[in-house]
Image: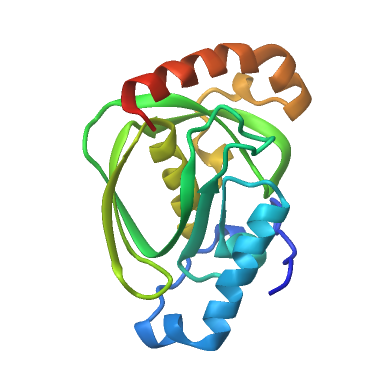
Length: 192
């Protein structure tokens, strides 16, 4: 396992639709070692998730984990380590919320993105077992952000109001208190 280089905005791999994996590819020692490195890189960077294209590998794999001690996202509810392979997300309602997002591939920039409040997640786990569950609120937003990477999208593509774009420092100074208040209400409402 190793720490991988994170691709930043402008790298062509971030704009490609990633290819699906076969079960044989998934269970290979090379893919399993890559998933270990993807997880290690996500944790090293204090990310809430990391998709394979963000480390220069255009395959449909992403890792998501929110630990209670994540300094970048102390307001996010915990998500146990989850590896999604060939994921499909389906909105389960039309309700959306404004999610203030940043990205390890878009250095020092945050902005407001509309995300579905209730989704269904279908994928394989890293062993090829079927995952099929629902996610709500901020947790649903985290899954949508990571799966966007597998479709060649980054959060800035979904920012509808460019005046919400700001540096991390200015976000913390001017926008964080209001967002944390909204996020806390979402977590209270959905439990995730």
